[in-house]
Image (cartoon, rainbow, N blue to C red; front, side, top):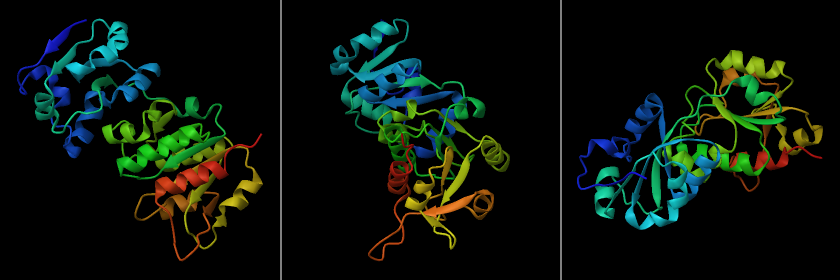
Length: 269
C-alpha cells in the first residue's frame, strides 16, 4: 500500500482535499472533475460497498489500523497521512471523523434504469440546502422509496454535506439528475406514475386521503425550501397533497415533511 506522509499543506498531490469549506468551489469543482469526497469511516465503507472507487485516501495516522481492510482492497490507491494540524490546514476544518477519500463519481443512471422496478419515487425540485438533500435521502433509504430524481438546479446529492447528513445512504438509493424537467415529468407519467406535488394548494388533498387510494406507482414532488413546488410543476402534476397541520403551524421543513410522507405513502403489502 503506498502510504505518503505529508509535511506541507501545499503538496499538490492532495489538491482534491484543499479548502473543503469553500462551498461554491466544491459545488463547481467536484462534478466537473468527476469526483466527490466521502467523509468518515462509515461513509467511506458504504461508498465502497456500493461499488464506488477511491482515487486516494486522506487520514490522520491514528486511523490507519482501522482502515487496513479497505487499503488491502485497493493496494494501488495512495493514502495520504499527516498530523491533525496539517490536515486541518489543508481542508480548512478539524478532521475528526476518521478519514476521507476522494472518490470517482459513478456513471449516471438512465431514467429507464431507475424507474424499471420502482413503485415509489421522490422528485426534488430545486432543493438547494445540502443538509435537506441528505436528510431526504436518509428517509428515502429507510422508508422504502425506490429512487430519487433531482431537478437541474437541485443541490448535489454527492456534495460532502449531503453525503454526511445522509450517513452514506445516498449510495443505497438509485438517483439521477433530470435534464429536461417538463419532458422528464411527462415520461414519468407515461410509465404509469401518479405525480403528486406536496404543496399547500387550495385543491390539495390530505396525505392520508392519498394513502387510502393506494396508487400502484407514485412520484412525490418536494419543492424548494422557500417557494415550494413551482406553478409550472403544479400544472403538470396529477394532484397536490398536504400534511394536515395543527396549532397554527402552516408547514414542516421539507426534510421533515418528506419523512412523514414517505412513511404514510409506503407500499402496503
